Amino acid sequence: MQAVFHSFQQEPKPVNNNTTKKTKYRDPFSETGGGTTQTNAGFGNIMYDRRVYRGNTYAQQVIPQNQQLELELERKKEEHRNKRKLLEAKQRQEKALAEQLLAERNLEPVEGRKHIDIQTMTYVEEIDETDVWTQTDPFQDRPESPVFIPSKTGVDMGVQVEDDLFDFDFEVAPILEVIVGKTLEQSMLEVLEEEEMEALRQQKKEFAQKRNAELAETQRLEAAEKRRFEEKERRKEQERQRLQREQECRRKLASRQFANQYLENLDLNVFTTLQEEGFFYDIVHRQVEQEFMPFLIQLTNQELDKKRQARVEVDNIIKMSIRKLLKSN
Image (cartoon, rainbow, N blue to C red; front, side):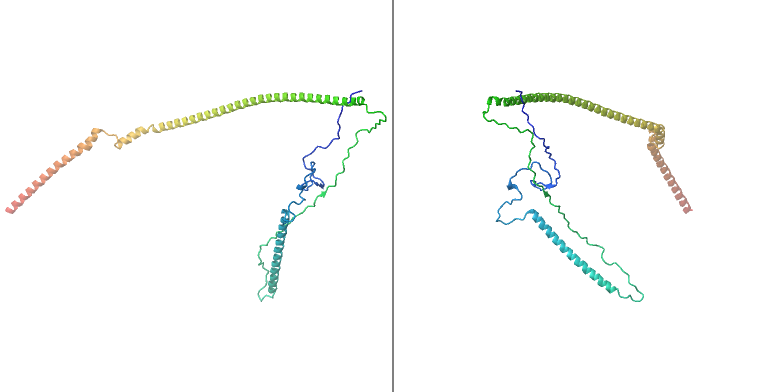
């Protein structure tokens, strides 16, 4: 009998997509009640169902958060209605007062005058604010899914044994052939899987070696580029310093040339001017002028004063003698 290998066949199923998709009906297993499809919806604990009341039923009822929000909205709407009524009453009162004033002004003007319409009301208008909210229609409940009935894949066969019993030796041979064939097939698949895993490990090892080599080469190139960049910056700094030194040298040279040209005839002029002003002098001549000549002049003046005084005395004696002679005569 030919060996028959066991094989398993199953109808294809759609892949579970985690992305949500908008559906027409509401998902009964969803916590939010939205129209998104959840493929993993299954049985759940009823104690975690939000529709089941938990707690003491005889205790005081606590208003849920959503009902509190509804009460707050109702209160705000009531306040808004009251404000609107007050505003309408105020506007009606102002309108009635304006009509009354207009009726009083409709009198005939006096002679030489006329009535003119003048806007005297305030230009500020109160802006009404109204709270508006919308409510979307609830999602429809999705109808119950029909019972899944797999399609028939094989051929129905009937075997009837009327008088003979079950022959184990004859009937067990196909089963053993299927089991042995399946075992051999599974072993071959495992061997192929091991070979594939070994090939993957070898490929990963080669890839790691190649990546490390490329990484080392990249680091070497980066280091070389860094050295070239630093060398370029150093050369640029040296060139900048050289240009600065040359500029400083040219500036000093120009300053020296200008100073030489300016001081070329300045020495003679300065010495001449200083000599004329008396800063450069002969020591003997200066001593003669400042020490000897004043001393000589002083002595001369003293001698002249003595001679003048003697002459005055002689004149006085002569005058006295003449007076005496005149008196005696």
